[in-house]
Length: 124
Image 1 (cartoon, rainbow, N blue to C red):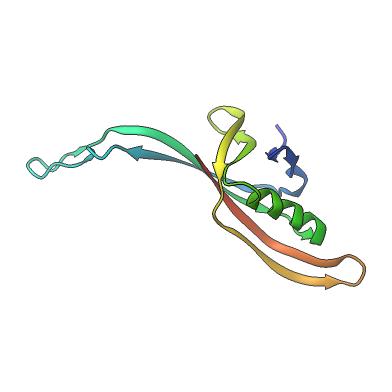
Image 2: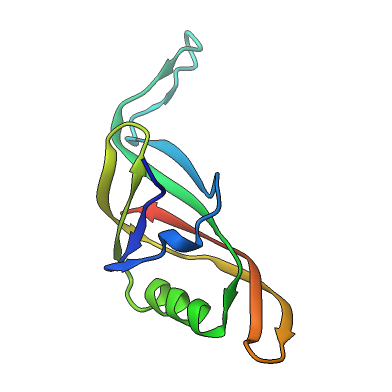
């Protein structure tokens, strides 16, 4: 199965290097969860499980990175389709709060080239 990353209908798969999506599944516990002081046992009541994606991208030119950042910052919540290790290709709603990139160099004809592009998507 090929890499797949579609955010708000825009296919960014061509910018994905191998091993470009870190997947993490987080449990959200209820306020009743915690360690009991009398027996030192942990009691949990999981109310939800949410996915966090840590995504890195190949270098991009000025036009490409503007498109990516516009998609990531255009709305509070966004939809993304990706390959999930539990469910295969899925579409979920996420939010994004961090984006990073480093200016590698300015190419005489192509303009700025950005690398080290990374961001996270956290399931709503």
